Image (tube, rainbow, N blue to C red; front, side):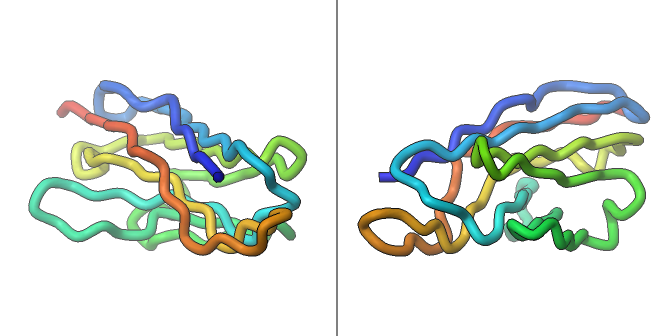
Length: 121
């Protein structure tokens, strides 16, 4: 059993910053890709950014230059530093881990419970 626990969401004014964290716990050897998705009311869930165990990153165009994803492989933790936040960044942010390798095999596409980020204008 693997759990992803997010923290760091909250309310911030436009132009402000927040840092999200997500720690994966359980019997884990390694995790291939970890990332952040978000879902705003009335919208589909969308990729914000992801990062491989080797450090290769991928960003949505709307957050490039403002958000930075990083991870600590030893701690099975991924971070999302969000700067210059805009009201349109308001959403529930979900942590995702794909291809989690453990003693019982491989787990695909595991999700956290989500953390609310609200940016006021």
